[in-house]
Length: 524
Image (cartoon, rainbow, N blue to C red; front, side, top):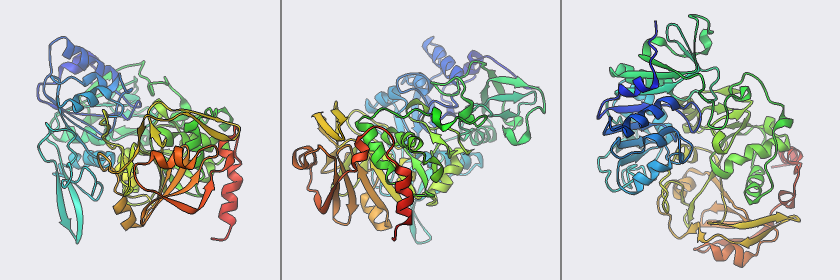
């Protein structure tokens, strides 16, 4: 029989100095009740102290919940994470040099869970070469107080690779499912993602640690189809039952996100026509029939909403690194999940496909771009977001479309009458002579023959052999004042400079379905 304990009792099992591996992806699959109990124990003065925290991606609601509850320098001594964008309190500790912090690509982190489950010394990967995780740059260290090297450069079979060292012996796993039967076998029928919780449980169990799983309910022995079981009961030591656990931080339970039902496309409401929507609409013109696509966070995550409005979601396969395949991926606090998914993979398998070059196109955001086509999304200004899946995706996709506003800060841009009206521009430039940190190497992309495009609110650029080339400008935007003067390096203007398609700046469908079909039928 399984052993059920309270969240408070689960928190009491963690000892000073433990290495804690946690599940969750953004706002989905989060064992929130246990995180809340750990925070409460710490604030009461009862410890634990000096933990090493290992998490595959950002887990939280930006300023609250999730791993934000563990962001205390006395509680966590070292954090090894795939992303910190959903955990602003951790980001502040990292920037202030109050805890040791590493950031490695999300796919590497997911695959590392499997390596640790098999008691391997680490993971060998080409992902991360010539970026800040390369030991010839920062080695994935996020601040000055982080000194121990965890990444080595290898020369194997005539090529360069990175060896990511397993970061220690894990003592505690905290994961989540939907149902546990009387023998502890866990299913995830209400989960919008299945993540790498199985590998985390295997890694900690095989290391002699404690595995704690939060579930919504206990069900009769053998009542769940074995195809639905994700984690066997012998891996789990304790269960915390939380009947009120949410599917995501904004959704109690949406059966269309777990595959129980399907939501009619007509129920998906188009986003308002704003400057961000303009970027997403222009980016959607880069979709191709039968594409297999990844969609990143930020503006890029708005593209599925465009595809739904245009009725083209069935013409290509939209994926998210969390493991979602097909359907209409969500954005903001629903990022990482999808309405009407065709399949939900464990995250490491999604990254196997990505790292092997399976994506035909990927749409991602940017924070800084420089004259060589390098992109920074990981550390800039007061932010230390880390990469998430950005490096895995950008180094291996055949085509790349980076999306974002040309300038940063408090913009006031109106979209009306078929054109853009810049009433107040951003206070700072995003196209700089040199990026603060290399998250994407433009030089490596050119060597590999990747096709790279930058889509902004007012202009579109291609990355060519001599750098960025301006290809399109928005109706209503001025070439010199609104574009060239806001770029801190020389950009070549194409002799065939075009206006961005006027349909992008008008409300309502753009008839993109017919455009894609006509493009496919035209001679190449």
